[in-house]
Length: 264
Image (tube, rainbow, N blue to C red; front, side, top):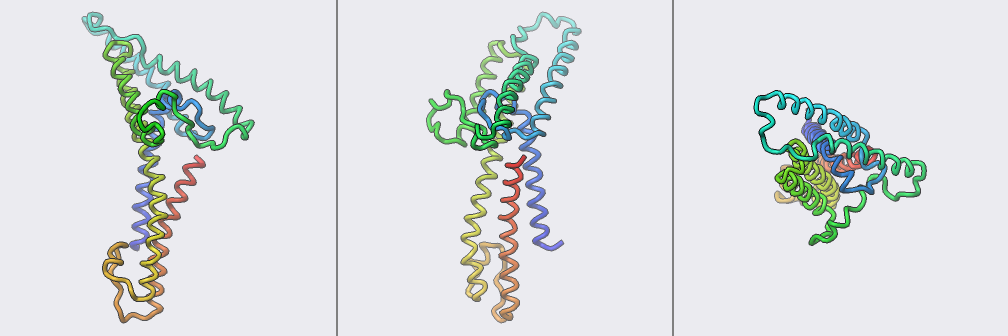
């Protein structure tokens, strides 16, 4: 396998791993996002994420009921501290109710596409987050403010026995999953813009290579050795074209990943 093929294989592996983490975190965080982003677009949640999240909300209450049944069979199980008012089953009921409400809203937008501008946008946040400092920073709200608010509320209500321990633990993990999901989304957007900026800086280096004026520092910036001074112009031109092709492929692959993500 040639170095460009190895580089593309490593990049593909990284993109696949990032997509897996993104989708898993999206499945865990979807119940939160239905509350935090009630005006999301029709294509904000992909079909696999919706399916996985729904399956999670079906399986977790059943597992919780099974664990509670086993716990009640233990001696002195009823002398423990209060269990809490709301359980994971309560969250599942709220989830399916919100799914029904959002399903009606989104189906109306599917029939009337003119009702929304961007179908992949998650919509504005809750008005309460606009009271926080730097509330106009979209990524700060998505990566830090919203997950931290969910984590804090879940912990506080769990301590006063409003939430049962299972629900508290799930909400805390879902808050972390939401933060990771949004960080990956931010990183993908930053990476795409960074590749475009790198391509702009790469132009003068390629021109210097073609004119036999590239310095050691220029070649080190793109991780290539300096070309010999006595090679033929044809070979120099071929090497320069190869370098340009390798870096243009990286930018092209990043753009395709962003496009496929939008279609999903």
